[in-house]
Amino acid sequence: MQTDEFEESLKALRPRLHRYCARMTGSSVDGEDALQDALVKALQAREQGAVVENLGGWLLRIAHNTCLDFLRQRSRSSIVPLTDALDQATLPDGEAVMVGFQTFLQLPELQRCAVILKDVLGHTVDEIAAIADCTPAAAKSALQRGRAALRQLSRRSDATRLPLMHDGDREKMAAYVRFFQNGDFDAIRGLLAEDVRLELVNRLKLAGRQEISLYFTRYAQETKWNFAVGAIERRPAMLVFDSTSTMDKPAHFVLLEWREDRIAAIRDFLFASYALDAADWMRLS
Image (cartoon, helix red, strand yellow):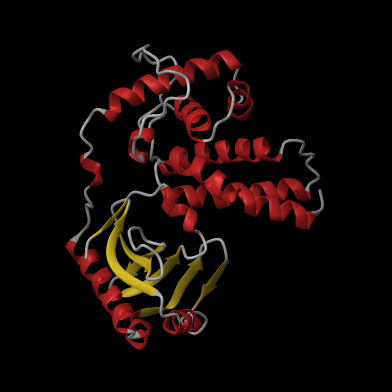
């Protein structure tokens, strides 16, 4: 496979890989971070001459190990051994339980991996074993236990859906959204830190007030976008709706990082709409 063909294949598989990473990390946003790290590792391995026979399985293996590293480094999940006692009841093969990301995160790693790969992405038990580096028997056991645990967890009330955010953070985001709604992009530029960073996820990264000025100019030129204050996985966010569509779901979203009263970073998912396919979002205005 030539380099250009390899990179095109990575782009095509990116939404599928994100679905896995998002559920493994318990967050659509953190899943994108893990995915970016995984793709960098894949490109480095390719440059070092790695021979790939099954690209999808190879990438999932890299993504799986990257997610485990991500969770351990960020201390976002307790590592629970596969042998921990859980209800042994199983779900019929292929019966998926509708649960949120945080519910997936409560499963031990191998159970989480098995359920996501089988019930979300449609892999076989043998493929799960290859990706998770375990025996097919262990993969099958993890799948059964994970399904049973998810059935129990899905019956509980999920209070984590409520957006828990500081009033100050919400007010800052509300002001940012109002400026977008009014087309007052000069006011937004006035809020930027000198070393502000912009990431158009899956497209490019820029730094500095001067460098990212064109970003706002292009938003000003596009009339189809409608903006609202919202929450993505309990984080303040600007939800961006496409007025030419049904408006029942955002087309993409934007996250901000603040340094006191200055915007230190903007993360815009315009070119990574797949992140919304699994994100827990809520409109607040």
